[in-house]
Length: 108
Image 1 (tube, rainbow, N blue to C red):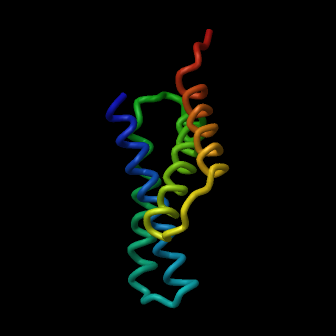
Image 2: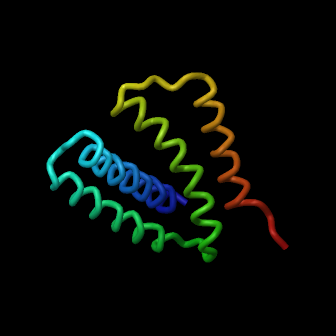
Image 3: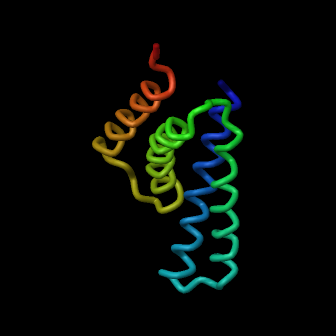
């Protein structure tokens, strides 16, 4: 389970970091290499989830979506210096609960 969590976190950081660098390049006129590194990170993001041990593509990506939301709130707080409010945290907690249901619900 620890390895799965690390893969989710690494994929999330690659996607958010890649998207952020492309955002800076296109929206804030940063140099082209920001976009190049951002694109490379997005490719890495596409590869990382394939290392998950869960056999179902849809479930992995659905669960990853919840992890992404939590990481995006944290990124906004730590990198963009936008303090999350109570509703950001409640929404993120609901997403984590959804991830747990998707991944670990008993199925017959």
